[in-house]
Image (tube, rainbow, N blue to C red; front, side, top):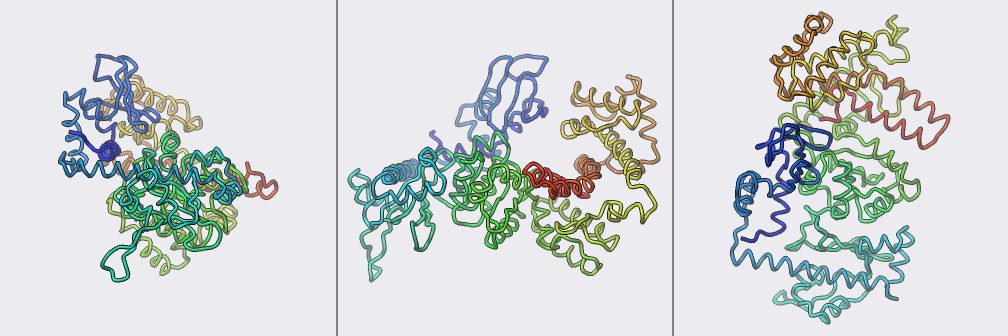
Amino acid sequence: MAFPAQFLDELRARCSLPEVVGRRVQLRKKGREWEGLCPFHKEKTPSFTVNDEKGFYHCFGCGEHGGVFDFVMKTDGLSFPETVERLATDAGMQVPQDTPEERHRAERRSSLQDVCEAACVWFERNLYMPEGKAALDYLHIRGLSDENIKYFRLGFAPNGRNMLKAAMARDNVPENLLVETGMLIQPPDDRGEGQRDPYDRFRGRVMFPIMDRRGQVIAFGGRILGDGEPKYLNSPETPIFHKGNVLYGLNYALPSAHKSGQMIVTEGYMDVIALNVAGFENAVAPLGTALTEGHLSALWRVVKEPVLCFDGDNAGQRAATRAAERALPELKSGYGIRFAELPQGEDPDTLVRSKGRQVMQGVLDAALPLSEVLWRMESGGSTPRTPEKRAALQQALGAHANRIQDPTVRGHFLKAFKDRIWQGGNTGGGSRGGSGQYKKSRYGAQNKDFQSITGVDHRAKQTDSTTRSLKLLLLGLIAHPSFYDQVGERLGSLDFSNLGRELDNLRQQVLKALAVESGLDYRGLAHHLNGAGYADALEALQNDQDLGDVFFVRTDALPAAALCGWEEAYGLLQGKDLDFEIREAERLLAEDPTTENFQRLQSLKRQEFEASAIPLADV
């Protein structure tokens, strides 16, 4: 049976390679890849790696290499059709039937793509003809070189009703296929009983070919030269083009996005092209429509947290708001969106061309998580002073959170909003909202006045709190060794020097044991530590009265909840010195407004949002 290429691409995208391989091989995360013992030959040291982003596995011991279909065929002894049927069942997809009708539809799609390709070649040729001079000049003025123009296959549709129609007729392209692809418009007659002669849809426009993820032309967008409406015109819906599922530039962005783990979503064709020319090759754009569920699904197949970068005007803000509301029901654990805030009146095209790559990168680095956007949208950036207004704010934010279908994500949003509102209201003051000079610290007063109000040295207080947090993070991993892959690297990077040699050595022994022997549970780890001479240090840590009854260090805590608790404690620890650093960065930027100082401040502000009571960037 011959499966349609589009169906196989969709099936590959839905199948998680680590998940499929993990049914046969015990994998552990190592950087961007997974590793384990090769199932194709006997080995004691792992040399088998799985790269989910690139969609392949590889064994450095025996040389076995392939994708998700290859792995199932080789390990389960299935034929290719049997493998496709099994994976499709697991992914909840209907396998296309190999019927004459299905073969006819596949041939039809191929024919329509051939028609679009022929039209694209004709548009490209016209751009460098005398009638295309104005369009070529326009693209050059927009900062594009001939190399850029050819890379994106830009072209020109002459201003005539039958010019494309006549050119395609000379190449024996059937007129009915031109109508079906949307290249020609065929209006009804005056009585509505028949059809008049078709005519060119695109006339007097710079042409942007729209391609699927494999780089095949499936539709077009055209920008009018001079005055006229609509400014941009897209192909209509066709059997091969559904604008709610297609992102302009995705075929160009995939290699860079897979490599970097990042994707930039803009509003228009020229934004994508300008960013690509400036070195941001991972940019895409929806096609004249708001971001849809289909767009989000396409983005999340590639990266876990795309950055939306809409224009810095009222229309751009409305688009961002619609995207935030559209994303809420689709959110799931590990996936989200961020919002980059452009200066008023700028779009990615104008900003990157006038201010350069570094300023654009600073805007992207400062992108806000969805939760922060919702907070600002409803609160204006500060916590209300009265209980009545805080309750109203909680109700508004709760309405947003309750649209989230995933119960785990919904619970984190609700708790994060509730904690932020009521913690922010305990002192009767507002939190930092972008225009205020100081941010309320986690100790309940503004840092500027903390010592004078309480009589307690802020730095001394913070040191005590830091010591407690470090102990809790270590004890949390001991209680739940399965967290090692997620938290081990971060725990190893923390400074334990002020806690004494005994605790620092205990931490190093824990990390060493879990790195060497995977699959240890609490009992196994405790047995190892006792045998290695750390029984007293472990007992002292577990009986430390200053730690209190914190749930995530208990061995009977649910793993998912305990991991969230660990992440929360880590986020709090990372955020303790941010207030001081932000004020210092603001002072330096005012004295010396360099790009480096601007990027430093933007990075710190992003850390500030991520260090909320529950890290909002993670929910």
